[in-house]
Length: 417
Image (cartoon, rainbow, N blue to C red; front, side, top):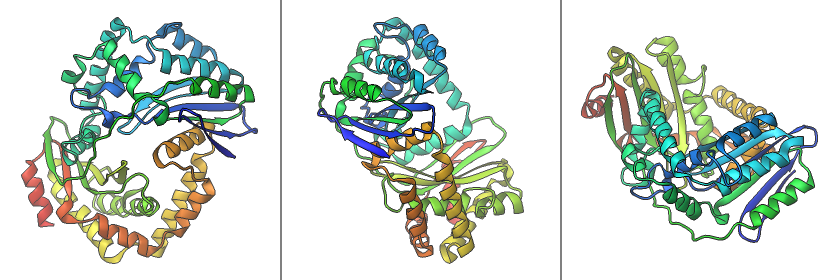
C-alpha cells in the first residue's frame, strides 16, 4: 500500500512496502529541470546532475563508484525539462548504505573546480553525440521553435557558450537555490526496514527551506524548421498542440496514439510502412508539460519518398478525423495500454518511478486499478473529440533533419495535402 507523508519543511515522502521482494528502489525527485533555468543558465540543471557524481566532502568520485559496485547496486540519474531524479536500486540488505551514498552525493557534493572543468568536456562530447543522433536532433529543433521564447525551447544539455562560464561556485549556488524541500519528493518501493524510513525522515527534515523560484510560462506556437545534415535518411516530425501532463484526457490521448502510431498494428505503421514501403520506422507520441504539450508523428525515410510519406501520413490523420477509431481498434489499444501498466509495475524500480513522478507532477498517485479504470472509461466519442481538438491543420508544425528542403517548402507540402 502506498503511503504519502509530508515532512514539516515540505518534503514529500512516498513509500510502498512490498514484502514479497528482496530489492528496494529509492529515488530523490527534484522539480528542477531545465525549464527553471534563466537566460545564461542553460544546461545548469544537467551539469549539476553530472557534478553530483564527482565527489563529496567524504567520498571521491572513485569512492562513489567503488562503493556502489561493492553492494551490487545500480545508481544513476537523469535530467528532463521538468525534473531531475537521482535513484538507487539495490538488495534490501544494502539499502541503508545506498541511502547514505545517495544522500552524500545529492546534498554534500563539493563542486570542485578541477572536476567542473573535466566534466564540462564530457558534457560537450554528450552534446556532440546528440547532434549526431538525427531523431533526437529533429525533436530538439522542434521544441526550440514551437516553444520559442520560453525555457522549454532550450536543450536540456545546454550549449557550449552557456556552459563555458559556469564555475563550481555558480553550480553550487544554483544547486542551493533549486534543491529545496518544497519541490522535493522522496520515493521508496520494495523491501525496507523502519530504521531506513526513520533515517530518511531525519535526513530530509533537516533540509533548510529556500525561496521558491518562478517558472516562466510556455505556449505552443506553430513552426516549420529544416536542419541540413549530410546523412542518408531524412528525419521528419509532424506536430500539433498536445495536452499537459496532468490533463484528465491523457488516457484518451494514449489510446489515440496507440491506434494511430503506437505499434505494428497501428494505422500509420500499416499504411506507411507495410502497404507502401515508404519507411522503416513511423510512430506517434505525446510530450506533455505543466502548462502545454505537443503531439507528434515521427518517421525517417529516403529524400525521394518523403513527399509521398507526408501525403500518406496526413491522409491517415484525415481519415481518423472523419471516421474515428473502430470498436476493434479501441479495444486493442485499451488492452495494450492496460497490459503495459500492469507489466510495467512489476519491478520495484518501476513502482518507485511511478510514485515519485506522479506525486511530483500531478500531486496524486493512481493505483493500477484506477489507471485501468481510467482506460476502461474512455469511449470512442472521447477519442474522436480529442482528435478534432488536436489535429488542427492551421496549428501544425514540422521539423526536418537531413538532406532536406527549405522550411517553406515543407509548409507548402503540408498545405497541399
